[in-house]
Image (cartoon, rainbow over all chains, first blue to last red):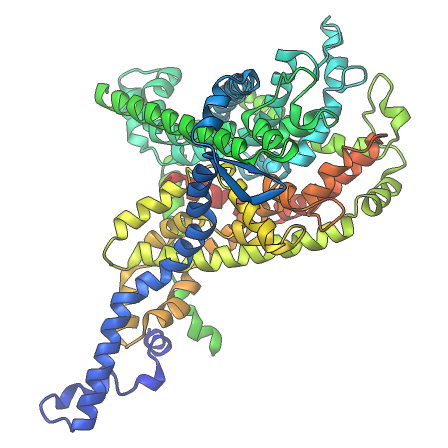
Amino acid sequence: MATRHDTAAPPEKEGGAAPGRPAADAVPPAVAKKRARLSRRWQRDMRWSPYAFVSPFFLLFLAFGLFPLIYTAWASLHTVELTAPTDMEWAGLRNYTRIFDDEFYWNAARNTLTIGIISTVPQLLMALGLAHILNYKLRASTFYRVMMLAPYATSIAAASLVFVLLFGRDYGMINWALNFVGIDNIDWQNEKWASQLAVSSIVIWRWTGYNALIYLAAMQAIPQDLYESAALDGASRWQQFIHVTLPQLRPTILFTVVVSTIGASQLFGEPLLFDANKGASGGSQHQFQTLGLYMYEQGWLNQHLGRASAIAWTMFLILIVIGIVNYVISRRLRASS
Amino acid sequence: MTTTLTKPPADPEPGPPKRVRGPKAARAGGQMHAGPIAYIILALFTIGSLFPLVWTAIAASRDNARLAETPPPFVFGSNLFDKLELAWTDANLGEAFFNTTIVAGISAITIVFLSTIAGFAFAKLRFRGRGALMLIVIGTMMVPPQLQVIPLYMMVAELGWTDQLQAVILPSLVSAFGVFFMRQYLLQALPDEIIEAARVDGASSWRVVWHVVFPAARPAMAVLGMLMFVQTWNDFLWPFLVLTQTGNPTVQVAVAGLGRGYTPDQSLIMAGALLGTLPLLIVFAIFGKQIVGGIMQGAVKG
């Protein structure tokens, strides 16, 4: 145990606390001065080092997080072209009014919403069920958990390219399998709902296991006696799940909903790569063009950075609205229970 | 001797996992055993998780003609290594691997270091504005990256950094998640008494960080490092915007580029996708347990 103090105590600071203590009232002036200096340094250290420790994060955030956020708002009020980003011309709210009359914007907004719902709702429900099963006493439980996480290790690019092949119209595995149950080949790339379903399935595949682990962690933190008393009251397993597990998981569920919503609103790589030839237009009829893709199309392909900034800010505002709605709902739920 | 010197602060290491495991172990007695249906469902999910990956390898071992037949191939062909080699040279994957390793490595190490000291300050030090600053950190997790790419792109263009790796590295260093993760870990893994003891011995804050916090935080630092490495390795949007396929691509940019050729060789694309994923799959195969533990640990308090 003594060694611990040895490591922590700096040898060069021997004039510090310990040795000087006995002769408190009879210190030579030099030592007193030194001690005063040390204690001043000590105070300064205690006072400022916390700020020193957190400042790198905040400096980086200011430079690469907050400044860009605000500058996006500023740029959205200007006409800016990609070719000359420093050449900004005041445009007032023109970029915004333009968006509201733009049917492609609304199309992209609708697609983002529907793909968001198709990808998030089944994903979280499956994750919940999966977590429930993983919470059973299992043989090789770690094995299953790692397996569920394999898609998370796969990048958007790799996953999207594989799914394009699996969803191929003529030779894809999924259509081949569907033929067995009497469903004709589906044109996954060009039909509206089919394509949105296919894009969503990439998201579902990549994130279900991850969310299941998060739910599982929360489930393991639920005190066992809650279940025991529920069982004593004669609650079935299903009733226990509904009346004990779900209420206890509420904060976690809310957290995953928020995170998934943010992710869904940002969807970019999957639809971009799902029809590589159409690229940013999100399919031949823009049938799966998301807001993220539309922003990219406006900013980088059409080179209107100002307009792209306006799109980005509307996305942010939508997120804030969703956040507030989430918050209100969770307050209501908490109040009602 | 040196090992014994550094050991004591590392004492709490086995503590926290035990504490996490505690309630689980306690309830394991009363926990329900999984029936056959549970195992069947798990098997289905496992197959669903792995199948696209395995099939990537199968498709990469075939050629275009075979992929344009029904039924699709289910077993390996003989072309795997040819295709991998071709993808490696075609997609400039060698350079891409080198670049991505640098980007992900620097980002992960920097994030871990900065997150640990910031997380320590938030968990264990008292200072004015701590609560408010922590709220800001959590708030920054909610800001979507797409709101930032336009000005960042302007900055990068202005500095002439397009196609240069620092354009990708610098913005990736902001990780609110990392700060949050380390704070949560240190809150429970680092007893206040150890810090007090070091203080009594006259250790400055930096010394406390170096000799007490880092040893105690080592397991969490390793997990965070892996998570950040995976995240940066797989990052797509921003590298896609500032790096070009021919300039200085990361793996994701190079792999995405494979899909855009005008005569797409599907098995070649699959070979590229496989190569781009393989390093992370290997990491997961070795450290999967730790990564799972890290994600779950970060989640409970999240």
